Structure formats: C-alpha cells, structure tokens
Figure 1 (cartoon, one colour):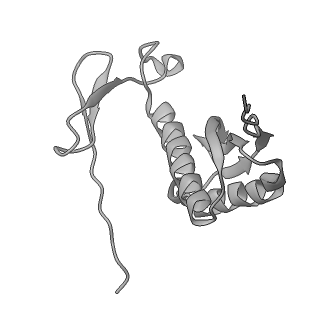
Figure 2 (cartoon, helix red, strand yellow):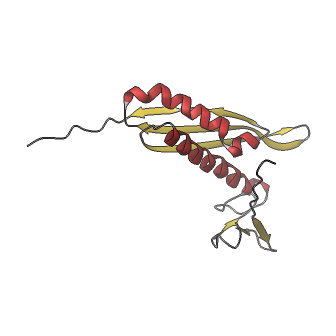
Figure 3 (cartoon, one colour):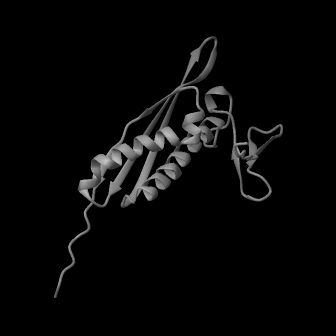
Amino acid sequence: MEPRYFYHASAHWSLHERGVVRAGEEIPETFTFSSPPEFGGQEGVWTPEHMLLAAVGSCFVATFRGVARASKLEFHDIDVQVEGIIEKEDGSLRFTKVIVRPEVRIVHEADRVRTGLLLEKAERLCLITHSLSSAVVLQTRIEAQEPAPELVV
C-alpha cells in the first residue's frame, strides 16, 4: 500500500469580521483571516484566496529547492510571485488560472537552461499546483550572478 500522509488545519470564525486559522497543536502560531473586502470582508487581512496562493508559492519554492538539491544546482535564491484569477464559470466563482512567476538567481550562467528545466519540473511535482483544477501557468525569470573573483593582494 502506498504511504498516506495527513495534515490538519482548523479555522474559527465568530460574529466579528475575521477569523483565526491554526495548523494544529504542533504549530502554535495562528493568523487572522477574513473574506475579501469585495465580498463584505475586512480589508488588510489574509483571505482564503491569499492562503491558497501562499500555499502555491511556498510549495513551489520547497519543491524547487528539493529538485535543485537533487540536481546539484547552485543558486543564490528564488522569489515566487503568484497571481490567481477568479472568474464566474458554470454559474459559480472559481480560480480559473493561477500564474506562478519564479525568479531564480543562479550562480553560473552555464546553468540557465538546466534551471529552466528544473523550474518546469518543480511545477509538475508541486503537490499544491498538481492538486488544482484551474490552469497553472509558469512564467520564469532566471538571472545569473556569477561570484566576483577574489582579489589577491
């Protein structure tokens, strides 16, 4: 039998304009959320929509890190911007497209093509993007930042 993994989260909402999310007793931090302002929620607070996009971004970064490590790719860092588009489809609102925009700073210019392939692999292997029914679009940006040569004095 294939392994199965279980994760838990809870959300609590009272009569106020926002609720609290918790990831389980082993992770004591909580954060506040609300409906988006356009749906009567409070402005300036996390929404379920933000949480979904944050899950996409964090999963993508973690997956790329693992893929890069297994491939022995040297990189300085990765930033991922995630944009979700919600539209009415089949009579209800849903995410129709999620655009993932990773920006990776690699150590060696010679790794540019390989980095692009590893970013595509990370998108395919990312558990969260793989679980979405919406279209996922990957728009990559790769910069090479070769280390400065050491000065010998």
